[in-house]
Length: 117
Image 1: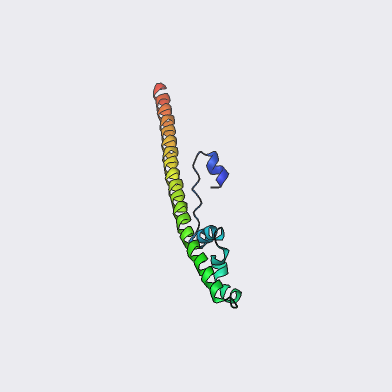
Image 2: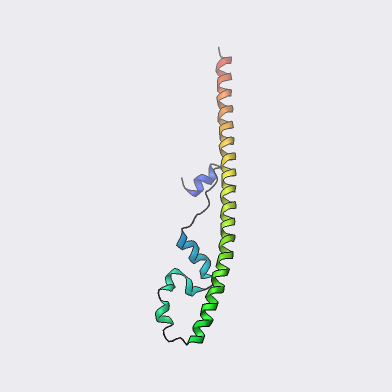
């Protein structure tokens, strides 16, 4: 079912659930581009001539970046959990509404058939 046909039918749309690398990179890209999965393998070459003091500063920056990542990842998880719960509630309501409508139609048809007897 496409997004528009799901929306047209009143069925809620499942939230987008990204994979691990995708989520990690999405968050880390905003914090420290060096620490994305694409760039980690390039660090040896990029920093081969780095002075010890510069390396120490960079490691401190990375430490802070991982702490920030942890906070933002928790926020991301909380949002995803909320989105999924909301989806579940909307889906339940949608199913109940459709079931009630179907039952009402069936009862009306049955009443109509009985009145014709």
